[in-house]
Length: 195
Length: 195
DNA sequence: GTCTATAGAGCGATAGAC
DNA sequence: GTCTATCGCTCTATAGAC
Image (cartoon, helix red, strand yellow):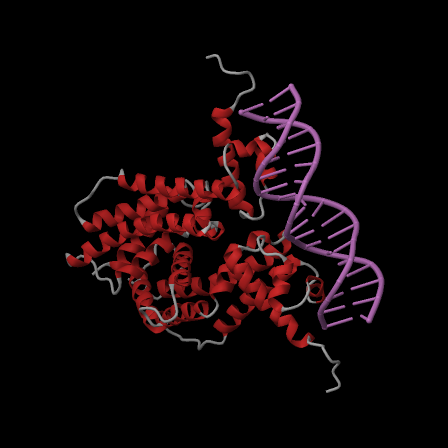
C-alpha cells in the first residue's frame, strides 16, 4: 500500500462532513465553529482547510450532495405508468428517503440563508426540479381525470411540506413503524387530491 | 407631560423587538450580533441591555409573545358546534394568522434550539396546547362519524405542517389572494380527512 | 496530512460619564 | 436613557514546522 504512517486523508474528509452535518443540524450553521467540527473529528481546526476552502463551502457541499442524492434516488425508482400508482410511490419514497436523513433534510431548508447568492440559486434549482417531479404526476392525474386539484403548484408544495414534516416528530422505535407512517400519509394524500 | 428630553424608552423597547425579530428570521439567531440589532434601531449596543438581560432572553420573549398571541387569537374565534365548520375555521385561521407574521413563524420552529432547557420547554408546551386544539376538533369529527382519520395525532401534525408551509412560498401581491389560498388549502384538508 | 501559533476581527456584556 | 470605552473571549483563516 505504501501509505505514509499517520495519513488518514481517505477517511478524514467524510468524517468532517459527517460531523459538520450533525453539528450544523443540531446547533445551526452560525453557532458551530470550525474548532468544534475539528474536535468532533479528532483533528485541529487548521486541518479542516485541507478539505474545504471555507466554512460556507462545507455547508454548500453538504446541501448539494443531499439534493443530488435525492434526485438520483427518485430517478432510480420504477417508472409507473399510472399517475395514482406513481403518486403513491412518490409519497412513500419521500417519507422513506427523508426519514433516513433527518439532519440533511433539516439543513436543506433551514440553512439556505447562509449561502451566497450563487450557491443559493444552485440549491434552489435542484429543489425546484424535485418539486417539478411531483407536480408532473399531479398534472398527469388531473388530465386523465383521476385527480381533482384546484391548483397543482400549491398542491405540490402542500404535499411536500406535509410529508417533510414527518422528520420533525418521527422517532425510531416509537409507536409507529416507517411503513405504517407511509400508509397513514398516503391515505391522507390520496384523499386530498382524489377526484 | 414633563418627560425628559431625549427619552425614547416607550418606543425603543418595541423597536428593539421588531428589529431582532426581522434580523433573527433573516440571518439566524447566532448569526446576528447585538451590535447589528442596535444599529437597526439607531442606538448603541450597550443600550439594548436596558431592555433585555441578555440575547437569549430577547429571543425567548419574541417566541413567547408569538405563541401567546396565537393561542389568544384562536381563543377569540367563534366556537362553532359542528366539527367540520370548526375545522374549516381552524384552517383559515391558521393560514391568515401565520401569513401576517412570517418572521415569527419561522423563528418559532427554527430557533427553538437556541433556548436553554427551561425556556425550550415553556415554548414547546404552548405549541402542544395549540396542536391539541386541532386534534380535539379531529377527534370530535371522528366520533360523530363526520371524519375518517387513521391516526388523529399524525393528522394533526400533518395538517399543521402543510398549512404552515404557506409562509415559505406566499408572496404579497402574487398570483393568489390570501382568501383564495385559504380556499385551496381547505379543499385539500377537507378531502384528506373526510369520511 | 496534521500540528502549533497567530493575525485580525468581532462577539456579549459591563462600567461609568453625562 | 443613552453613550463611549473596554474586558475577556472566540471566531475564521493562514503560515510555517515537522
